[in-house]
Image (cartoon, rainbow, N blue to C red; front, side, top):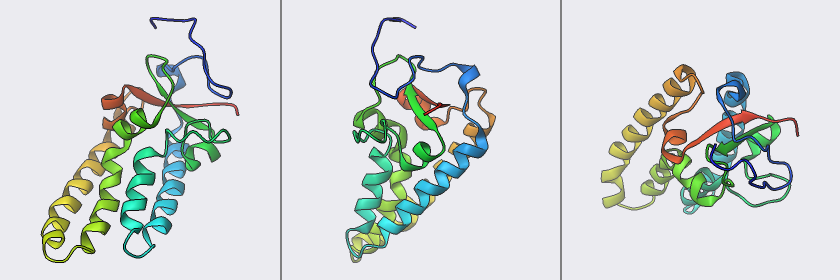
Length: 163
């Protein structure tokens, strides 16, 4: 790593992660299920639910709530943390870069509320979301560091932490 003297906020691990820090797949799947449940509940809000769910999915790992330490509710409960490989802090921008593909599900729900034009895009966006989801699942299982497409785009990985 370029700068070993960088500082991290309270609760963050000082090492940005390496192959040895790869998070347990079972914990990652449980964390994803928790976050998925949250997204579904948010998505149930009429008219704005899809947009709100998409926003949660996109920014979930960069929220600056002190008790969350820049990670989603599911990752917090499972003691996982997304970290940048260059050691920079996880923020909203990094979160959006690593999670935009999951926001597509909320966009699909939002499109249902837009008559005619929205309905034209529901199927293509849903198919794209499904295909990307399959790719993400494949990569998180097969990549030696557990890095999915979103991690590669954002230069991040998910590690296990003690807190």
